[in-house]
Length: 195
Image (cartoon, rainbow, N blue to C red):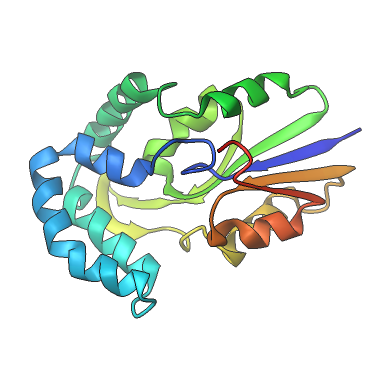
């Protein structure tokens, strides 16, 4: 039986949101001031009066724009070494160990940026489908190469990735409304399964 597993990352496999965690780790002082400035923006997003993608782009850019890719990647490695496996839910780690990798494909499908999620996906043996950061000449532009990978976008990316490949069973795991389309797309959708 050929299976496809689709896992959301933040809040599903992890105990906390990795965007805030990584940006704070990257530059604590800059993070503090940027977070304070973005509080009105976060409120507007919560009230659905502002596009979440724009807010996310603005917040990430306020800390990482203009930073060299090589410097970011060095920080990503130390971030991963410090926080893996502590930020991954124990129940999720136990579940991942039970998967028969010979007949299964696993995707990590996340709205988080590829920048800091790559090492986690690699360690857990998953193909990463994420929001992708845009670099030009080795410098982060503050922009994205793809749409924010959330909601219906997750399903679009999954379909593009699997193309015409057939699976006997597709099983998805998520924890927010942004995962609902992916859970509906799967034969079997699990909401807050590891909580």
